[in-house]
Amino acid sequence: MSVDTRPATGLSRRAVTALAAFAGVVSAAVVLGVAEVVSLFVGAAGSPLFAVGSLVIDLAPAGVKEFMIAVFGTGDKAALLALMGILIVVISAAAGVLELRRAPFGVILLGIGGVVAVVAVVTRAGATGFNGIAAVVGGVTGVVVLRLAIDRLRLWQRAAERSATAVRVPGRTPAAPQFDRRRFLTLAVVAGAASVVAGTGARLMNATSTKVAAIRTKLTLPKAAVPAEPVPAAAMIDVEGISPFVTPTADFYRIDTALQVPSIDPDKWMLTITGMVENEVTLSFAELLTLPLEEHLATLTCVSNDVGGDLIGNALWLGYPIRALLAQAKPKAGADMVLSTSIDGFTAGTPLSVLQDDGTNALLAVGMNGTPLPLEHGFPVRMVVPGLYGYVSATKWVVELKVTKFSEDQGYWTPRGWDAKGPIKLASRIDTPLAGAAISAGTVAIAGVAWEQHVGVKSVEVQVDDGPWVEATLADSISADTWRQWVYRWPASAGSHRIQVRATDANGKTQGQTYQSPAPNGSEGWHSITVSVS
Ligand SMILES: Nc1nc2c(c(=O)[nH]1)N[C@H]1C(S)=C(S)[C@@H](COP(=O)(O)O)O[C@H]1N2
Ligand SMILES: [Mo]
Image 1 (cartoon, protein in one colour):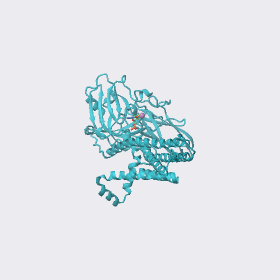
Image 2 (tube, protein in one colour):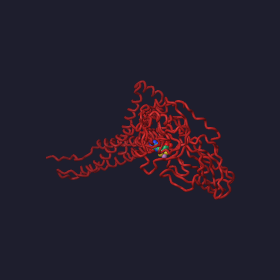
Image 3 (cartoon, protein in one colour):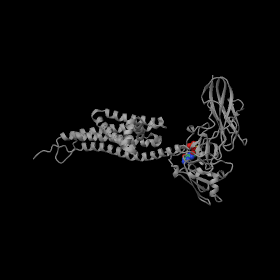
C-alpha cells in the first residue's frame, strides 16, 4: 500500500502565481468599474478608459499614429482600445504577482496606473479637476481590493501548506484551507463581477451623455425672430461685488432632483401636449427650431432660496412662446393647470392662465445666454415662466405638457410639503459688502439686487443700525421679469454696523420684516448683515 502525499487542498507555486495574477486583473476591473460609476455623478469626462486612450493618441509620435492607421485603417481606434485592454490585463496581472512576491510593488504599479488615469482625465479638453475624483476613488478602491485579495491568498496558501504537512486521518480533510480558499475566491469573484456589471452599465450611460454633449457642442441655434434688445448701460451698476446683471451660465445656480443629468439626443426629443385639449400636439426638436423663436431676459428663482441666498440667476432665454403651442392644442373648458413632465419623471404644475397670458413670456426654451441649454440646465428643451418659482414652472428636459386641473393633478413638490402655486415673492439682497467683512472708513458702496419677477421693483431702501431708511439708487428696469441692481453709497464710520435692505414693488407693497423660512411657499424677511469698519 502506498501513502498519498498530495495535499488534499494543496496549492502549487504555479497555481498561487496564477491566482495572484487573477487578483491583479480583478483589482484593475475594480479601478475602471468604480471610476465609471463615480463618473455618472462627477461627469462623463471622469471616465478613465477613453481619457487614457486619447492621452495615448496625444502623446504617440506621428510615426506611430501613421503606422496604426496604415495597419488598421479606420479600425485604428478599435485596435488602440484592444491593445490597451491587453496591456491593462498584462500589467494588472503583473501587479498581482508583484504584490504577492515583492509587496508593496504591486500596489505601487497599480497606483501608477491610477495616477496615469487621473492625469489623462484632468488633461482632456473641457475636463476639470473635479472629473479626476472618479479615477482617484477608483484607484484607491482598486488598491484596497488588491491588498485584501493578496492577504487572503497568502492565508489560503499557508493553510494549504499546514494541512499538507499535518498528520492526516484518512477520509478527513482539514477545514482551514477551504475556509481561506472561499474567502479569497468570494472577494475576487464578487469584486470582479460587480465591477464588470456595474462598470459596463455605467460606461453605456456615460457614452450616451458624452455623445449628447458632443451633439450639443455642434448644435447651432437659429437666430431669434424676436431678438432681445441689448442691455442698456443704465440697467447695470458697476460696483465691485454686485451680481452681474446677466448671470454667466457657469455661475447659474442648479437645482433638480436628478442624481444623474438626463442625456437626451435632440433628434429623439419629442414634446406632446395631452390631457384636456381639443387637439393633441406633438413637436419634434427640428420642428421647434423652425418656429419663430423669441429671446427674453428673465430671472429664475428657487422657492428654497433663503433670505440673502444665491438660488437665483438672470439669463437670456431663447425659445418659443408656450401660449402659441397651447393655442394649437385648444385647452378644454374647466382646465386650469398644465402639468409639465421631465424625462426623469419630475413634474411641475403651472396655472394654465399664466401660460396662456399674452403678457407673460412663458417659453419653451432651447437657448441660454446665446448657447444651447447646458445639459444640467435642461438640454435640449426646458420651460421658463417669469414670475413663478422654478418648482412650479421651470421643468428641465421637458417632454410632456398635460392640460389638467389643480383638483386632479399635482406637481412633484406639492405632496412633499410645498404649495401647489408658487408666485415669486418680493425680495432684495445685499451682494456687497459681504456679511462680516472688515472695511475701511470712508465711502462704501452697499449694493445688490432686488426682484419680484413679473411685478417689478419700484424702490429699494437701506438702513444702517437704527438710522433712517435711505433710498438706494436703482439701475433702470428693462422689464418687470428681471431683477434690478441697486447701490447706496454709505459714509462709513468706524465701528460695527448692521446693514439692512428692503424693497417696494410696482404696486407699492414693501417687504415685511417678519422672517419666514422657504417652505411652503418662499422665504420672507429683510436681508441683514453686519460689517466692521476701521
Ligand atoms: N426636470 C426637472 N426640472 C426642474 C427641477 C427638477 O428637479 N427636475 N427643479 C426645478 C426647480 S426647483 C428649479 S428652482 C429650477 C432650477 O433651474 P436651474 O437648475 O436651471 O437653475 O428648475 C426646475 N426644473
Ligand atoms: Mo427650486
